[in-house]
Image 1 (cartoon, rainbow, N blue to C red):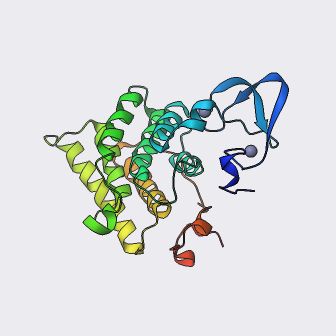
Image 2 (cartoon, rainbow, N blue to C red; image 1 turned 180 degrees about the horizontal axis):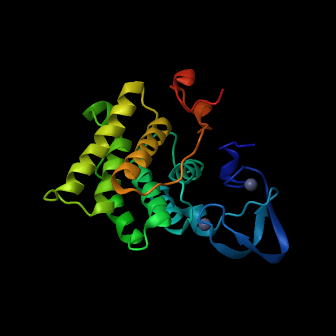
Amino acid sequence: MRDRQNKQTGCLECGEELQYLEHDEEMKCSYCELDFISNVKCVWGHYICDDCHAYDAVEVIRNVCLSTKSVNPVLIAQRLFEHPSVKMHGPEHHYLVPAALLAAAKNTDGDSMNLKQALKVAEHRSANILGGFCGFYGCCGAAIGTGIFISAYTQATPLSKEGWSNANLMTSKSLEKIARLGGPRCCKRDTLLAIETAIDFFEEKYHVQLEKEEKIHCSHSDQNKECITVNCPYFNH
Ligand SMILES: [Zn+2]
Ligand SMILES: [Zn+2]
């Protein structure tokens, strides 16, 4: 069912055929979770709004993270993994990590947080982390994404004291987890490791508990020819 080829013409969620209804219905977009009036959905009832259909990876990450009410950054990330514009591997994950964490933090405890502004900051900064940063520069972009999360959350600058310290500590903790598991890179594994590390660090330093997933199952191993299978904590046995 989850055939990426079919998503070129069929449902963006499951690849199945689209149905055109005689009458308009109220439908919830399965990406941005906003309500729309439409007359098209797939045979399984999935509806994806025009914007979520057309957006590229950065746009869909921004859009979904702005509208989601989820307090679970892993589920937000996994939702975004399913969008066809988010490739198996690629630098869009460097933005996806801080965006999912900022959205979950805002939905958990962030009445005072300007999420739109924080996402803009994260988008701008993550755009400078090139693809392949992990292997070429020795610093995985998903790990830097958690540092961007803490920096944006605390509005840290190079002159800050605590925010500066915590942003760098955050990156180092994610990076160690990612590095110790070994290569080759997998943007899905490294994103999930980074987010899980950030949830614990965020609770420890800022006493805000984001929702955790007890057991994370990867749904992308068959699309990753370098998958480390049983050596990956998320491999689906
Ligand atoms: Zn569908
Ligand atoms: Zn949408």
